Image 1: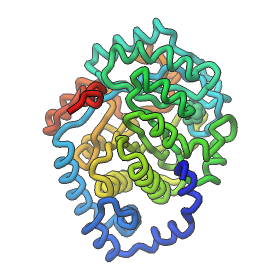
Image 2: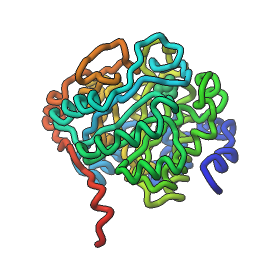
Image 3: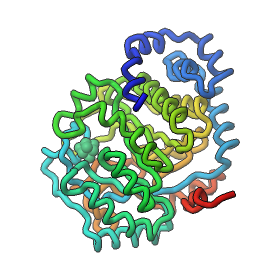
Length: 374
Ligand code: SF4
């Protein structure tokens, strides 16, 4: 087997959906007794029948999270380096046909953005860009990475899928993690929302996590854009993907993100609404399925909701985010990828976390640790 694509084609979406929606209360109760690493249990916990068990799921998820991660919550900030994009995704403000001002940060501008992020106390950044192979491709990333790595202990990227050799090149420059979200695991829906550009290639994107792992990058982030299709089924597919990766590349760490579709320039409204209770169910189901997976929560969600979700399974969060290139130095809503909901400052979020008994972590990782012999 060379990538998850081989396993994916053997999964029958209709059969999975039928089982998901015919899950009974007894199935959920059985799943609660043995949830870890068990895909049948994950299916039961993601089912509509599990909505009646949110309270016990939340209690179990909170206890597991506390046991594995303590009261720690890691803070990171997205650093948008470009909004150029050669793809058309109908849910995104950076889509190529959207008439928005385009910008790619120069090295000077990047330095100015980093200075502000450092000033705010962050030591972990997520470099984000639209997908534009020729103008913001591997050579651009390789040129800026040493500069970014000189300032931050942990550097992750959320950019277009690359080849293994490119990931190897970036790993040598100190890249710690790559986030690559499939958006939806339903090929028909995927084709409907991705209408131009290289991102149309569903299988190439699906095999990206394998290429990242083969390049030896320490951490891989998976995600689905909740609202494009049936979120229960998409989440179940992501569970299969996560389990395949953990079993195939056991040295790699994994994280997941559960972003809900947000309004943006020229964007669509969600086809399938995910309620707050549904989001709680998702977080708890994944925590019970996989006690060590990291789960991040962005500023897409409202402050009041975020404050209630921390304890259930979240391990990483952003605060005071801008979703536009150059947005920390020159805020301008013209260039945003999507609207954010939690607009509290970093100080406000940190003070609230402390009030709630959490320990905000600015740094939890040092690459040198894995390069030292015991
Ligand atoms: S989702 Fe990504 S690839 Fe699609 S338009 Fe937005 S930035 Fe480009």
